[in-house]
Amino acid sequence: MRITVIALLIWATLANGQGTQAKSDRQAILDYQLNLRRANQLIVAMAAMTKYVASLPDFKERVRKSLTMTPAEQLAKIEADPKAMSILKENGLTAREYIIGVPALRMALLAAQGMPPSTNIIVSPANLEFAKANLAQLKPKMDEADGMRSGK
Image 1 (cartoon, rainbow, N blue to C red):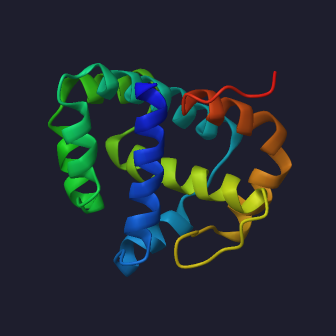
Image 2: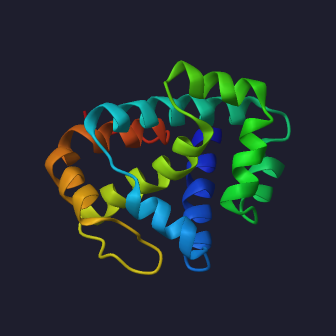
């Protein structure tokens, strides 16, 4: 249950922050190039990060605070957390790759499922093509990482 709550709050963060996001942050998401290896790294790291945050006694407060943080603030928060950095390092990611890559992957998958690009859904044509080509493989993994059961 905690993981599902966190997944929903993470989604709210994305939906909330993208409309007012700085041009450079939007461009970073557009410039982030997804591939299968990187997508799998992001998903595994996201699942581990979600479990880690859910295990903290103040997880609700942390997630609530993240709703108002800029990507730069989120980056600094992750870089200052040894356990979070350990999770990312184990998955071959930097904090910046994670902060940009997870939303890029999530929005590409949403767009591949038919949600049109908008102020809240930022996706490059290449990432949309990648997500469409790999949707059947990646969506169940993403759902599982979010704490939702896929239809396996």
